[in-house]
Length: 230
Image (cartoon, rainbow, N blue to C red; front, top):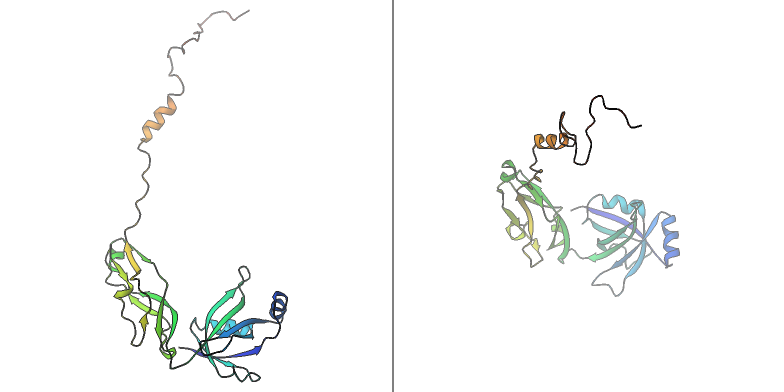
């Protein structure tokens, strides 16, 4: 698991206006809290530094550095939650939770499917129902991802969370045996109308009377040589 040092500063000003000013200075507000802390601490961190750190993954172990904050400097943390601008995509806010290396924590870990399922060779489609799962383990044991081999998955078969063997020291925290992946049959194509091409052509031709046919009911047949109406 990646370990990164993160420089933070104490935040004294609050409110939306001050938050905007912080972001204008290329910093972002964060809140640091934990079970062993008396109260949360409001901090700021460089937006670029935070963004660079997030590229290492969702469960990076952070060592906070704040020379002017003895209660924060050297503490370990992970990102509990973060807020991203819905349009521009930059980080706006984050929650950091304190961790201790000898205490297990709960984290969400990505699920990665590996191998080619047997059922896919039979024409099936591999569907992944879950992308992450919550596990509990010591900080140093957090896996970067949980890899699941789907090679033996037949058409119509599925894999559930209870079928997975997690690394030693890592345990699934939920109670539901949810489906992670399944090989399903492709959806049947919608049938076209049964009208044959010849029937369509005949219907189109029937719109005009055939040569030599009797006039329509109520109509008058024009005889050759007859005088025009005067």
